[in-house]
Length: 171
Image (tube, rainbow, N blue to C red; front, side, top):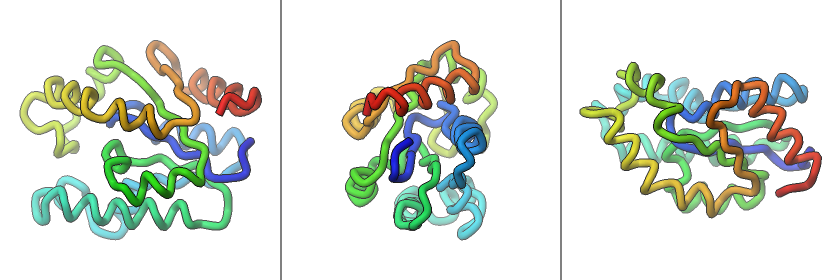
């Protein structure tokens, strides 16, 4: 296991939160979901977007990520899909082991089709998700120490692949 934080990145609905919680539980580590930190501090994300806009949300998100990464105790941290757009977050990730949970539209389609709580998927969620995937995938890949293709895998299998990659030093 790495000595620094293990950070999960990837597109919305890729499974970062559920995988992060499961990985943390399996390895006896604290778990932090930065979206949840934002909600606790500022309220529901859709309301933040509606009342203050995306820029305000991104600033709050960057503060939450910085706080999570500054914590002295090693933990598993799941980032919101767009958190990696912030240059400060990108710099902070250099001090962590970063796992990109890669996926495809077929895998996330059932999750995003019923996702009224995702402001960036307003309109046609499939078209919006695909556009975000095209835009963000190169960023995720450039930041990742480990890439896990989650297509067709259950959560325990993803956790096992992350564990194996860490054990084998593939980062």
